[in-house]
Length: 275
Image (cartoon, rainbow, N blue to C red; front, side):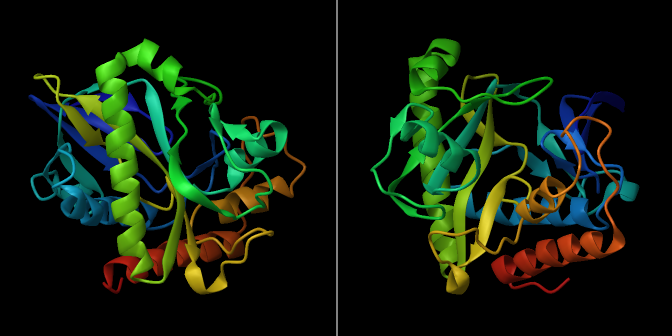
């Protein structure tokens, strides 16, 4: 196998016509990889993605070929995938106001060109989920995009498909999570095109690295929410004397443990499987 790409938290290997995607225990915040891993994180992301892929398969094709036909040393954290032409757009669905969406709303009353009602607070539920894409930057930070910019980049038919499938995936995921007492505030999805030009869901899906998860019983608009995702690490790092540029700060053992506990708690609540 040939290493074809090493990302912030994943490696991609070419194996004939397939791709082997391996999730590491590395963690990044503000697009900077921190030097301290979160033990077991890669396996949790992989297994949770597989759980979701199986429950979204009727909505959209996905890139999964097999989670078993992978090298033994990567079992549990690797997926054999279809090779795709990945689209240069981060597809974000928001059902609640948080993070960069909240910042944009406070500045302009809109997110990625989508106007939102006045008077919303941090953590507010939106009247309807909205599509708020960003660029997929090779280096540095992703930047907000409007729908028109997405259409100019990938074509109107593909752009319309991205909106439709992103919101369908979010709605299905949010409904299943709600049955388990979890709010999915927002999520980031990635898509590619196969050889026939079919839109295919790829990478990870509805994980604590790519989404915001809040316990529904603790949700209170107007304040930061208790998170079962990477937001906990962002909040920790924002209190440091760090300029959000490499090298990132080492994570203390208690923060590692608390982060791991949140990822594990989320996985068990969503899947009803104990780790």
